Amino acid sequence: MDIRDIRTRLLELLTAIAPDIDAAHVDPQRAFRDQFDFDSMDALHFAAAVSEAFAINIPERDYASLVSLESAAQFVLSHVPGGA
Image (tube, rainbow, N blue to C red):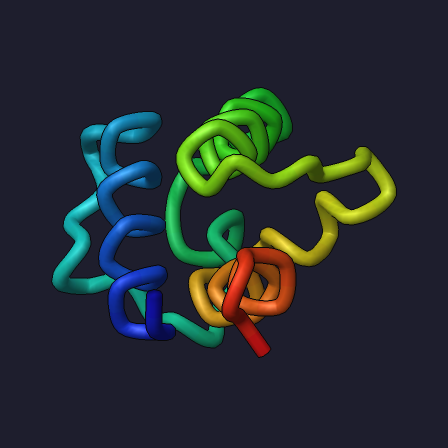
């Protein structure tokens, strides 16, 4: 799985949690909460969805790594088998 596949899947998860988000307009570098109405419950649901989708354990202390598309993609890449 490469970084593009990870980003695509993360966008799918993000828009499933917050359907009002237009995936085409997500700035990968900006925090989700700075781009749209993404509260702490959304962040928690996103972390759980990422954990399940990629079969990785994400301790609460690592939730800060999931604040933007790019940071989440890098986090997943470093934790999936065959990643960085």
